[in-house]
Every structure is written in structure tokens, then in C-alpha cells.
Image (cartoon, rainbow, N blue to C red; front, side):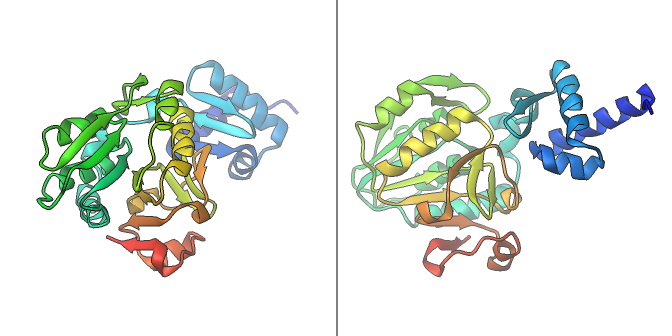
Length: 259
């Protein structure tokens, strides 16, 4: 029996809404939510993608990145108190001297801002690909600032791509402070392939890898996996231990830093 076109249109509008809200959905989850077959979902994804609202991926669909991912300015006002607490906790982990890396993202920008209040730094080399963090740290007391080159991503105000990854080979870091869009039982993820690729390349360059994510990222899974929980040295978050457990995340006490 042929389904009326108006019902098909309503279903596809709901599909578009779900993907835009969640950022990424696997086909199996779409089938469950819309109570339709996999074949129907795949036809609907083709139709919705043709209108430019989503991007089909292997096994699912991703919301159009530029329309769904807020700019740095838009994101800077979100969860500001939590980000400030995370930043203070992160800065307490930064040595007086040595070499650290600061990632892109508004939470790490908050870390950079908090770092300017440290008065005990002794020629701390800070390497970043974030123009926002670099602007904050320029001229900061005790900081020797280095900015990696690469492809400019406007919505992140960051430099990424092959050139930035190649530049990482010249560095080794005492600690790296990274951001993410999602944290679930499997680990940390991001929705932009260039960001995730850069972060994965960075992991072996740092003795300590600290991810800084506020509680709004809890339970989210975006398409590009960055790190498993075994790969990180610490998670700095305002999410409580019970919230992490409820999301399937179990970390030893020495890897969980509550902000």
C-alpha cells in the first residue's frame, strides 16, 4: 500500500529535526525512533540530503556541519560558569615550566584566560592552533607562545589539516588540554573530521592528555571518535561521578577531576 506523500513529507521533516537536534544518528536508531524499515530510512536520507540539510555517513547521518555547529561567538556564552570552573581546575594541572598544548574551543579558551592569572610561570611554552587562545595569551607573563599553521576553520577560529598535523611532529608536550563535542561510554568524539584527525595525531605527542568537557556533552556521540577512556590521563568536567556512571562512563579516581 502506497503511503500518502503528505505522510512521507512529515516523516522526513521529523527525520531532519531529529538529526539536527542530535547531530548524528545511526540508521538503526532512526529505524527505532520512526518505526520504519531500514530501506525506508535510507530512501528518506537520500531525499533529505538532496535538500542540503544533512550529510549521509557510513551507517548513519550527520547534521550539516556549518548550519548546525554554532560559531565561537555563539558558543562562548553557553555553560559559562561550568567552563570557568573547568578552566580553573585545568590551570591547576599546568606546570610552572615546560611545554603544553591548548586545543581550540571555548572551554579551552577559558583555560587560556585563566592561565593569564598565573604569576608563577617560568617560560612556559604554550603551543596552540586556536586563534582565540593565542589572542588571549599574547603577552601573558611567563608564557612563550607558539601558533601552529594550517587550514583555517572559521567556526572554530582554529588552524587544522595536514599542515597543522605535520607541525605537531616538531613538538612533544608535557601536557595537552583538549576539547570535545561528545563523551559517552566509548570515549570522546567530535563531529568535524579535521578536528578529530588533528586530535588523534596529537595524542602520542603528549605525556598527559586532559580532556575538558562540560556536562552538556555527556551522553552525546558524534561521528568521529577521538579517544577511548584508556587513552586519556584525565577528564576535567563539572559532571558528577554519578552522572558519568549513569552514562556508562567508569573512570578510576585518578582520571576524574571534578570542577
